[in-house]
Image (cartoon, rainbow, N blue to C red; front, side):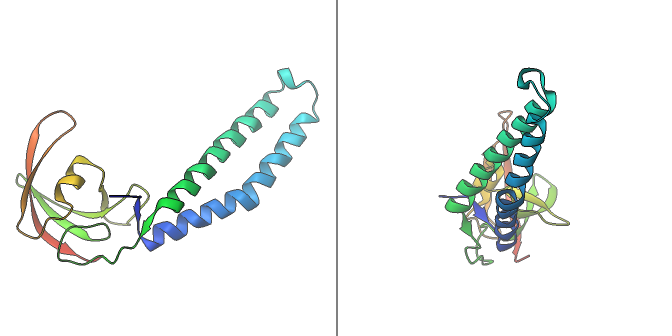
Length: 154
């Protein structure tokens, strides 16, 4: 799968965060750096160093968001025929029935956990139809079986 799969809501939320960092975050941190710089010797100025560190974290987040949004696959027309990003899937994991929103770590849902398509379980069930059984290896090395019992749109 190429790119990160995002719902329209997640894409819009991340785009708004990026815009806020560019238009409000950068000027705010620049002002903080200038204020700290005015306090004197920069080698021993904790306020200045803290502001520069925050600037570095903010610029890293801006680059991360730009790359994520540039490569994102947004709302790729989910259907209930097979497990794919954007659907809610019900899984029977060796007797334990759970329901998940299939997506990326950037997706959020008020009542459901998000099942990343890059996780071992996510990779196992993507493309499966209702009734299909798949097995997957856990990070600890165990092999588990999972059965898709339902697929619906959120």
